[in-house]
Length: 383
Image: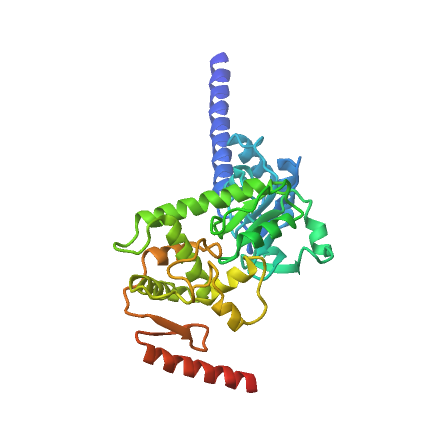
């Protein structure tokens, strides 16, 4: 009898183990299977939250079918104690396993609110953006300058832990403009003791946290510009009329200020390189303007004839060669154009009315281009 009982018990144990293994296998397949979410969502995980709250939020938003399997999967994978606060993009049909990975991986939030502080040529502005998970595009919900009253949309999100911040520097902004704007950025801290050298700051987009130090951000910009210039100098074309990377940076700043068309930069560079090689003056208005403003804001008027005749270090209608310093902070493309210009015979260029320039090899051809540009200006003035 005891043998029968033992045999039956063993059989039941085996059956139970098979059932348990089957349940575990089914749960694992459910955990790794494509999820029910039809449209991407932005999942916000509050500071101090837990997997129970997260699983309930996911079930409410239709991202998972079983809160129990979700929590058990996180526990079984050893990630139940690794939940991170933030706002995370959960894409359509993401599996529970993928979602657990998303909310435990860490790093910057991947959706939600982003505050971009844009430092441009003419002004600085805040832009508050919200990610639309369905289209994965940002929608601007507020725009304002440092001098404006703070809009409600910004007041609502600025102290949230998962709001991301970026400072975006426009190519061609001067060091004075950048420092002035950073001092007005209320989400930064610390002082900038001295204005950085012109041209030494890399225009780019910089991820930040509220309270980050302004001087440390300046250091990041300078390091990046040094690296860009060093790499471009190492890969420069042969025979260029520069004695140092510093001279190439000066040329890059002139190119940056002369054209807003990216594809024109190598051609503009070729004009100035050809002029230097032939001993011609550069005769470029942006250097004259910099000599007048010292990079502090926009001139806001035309250049006077007396200013074009003035003997100053930045008046390239009077001096030979390059001015003594850069006249702005050039971007990477302008640095590369200065050190790898197009191979042309161009010596002149003038606006062509389309936002670009008409290039010429001879003074006669350039004179015709200038006449066409003046006709365009006259026609626009009469409209």
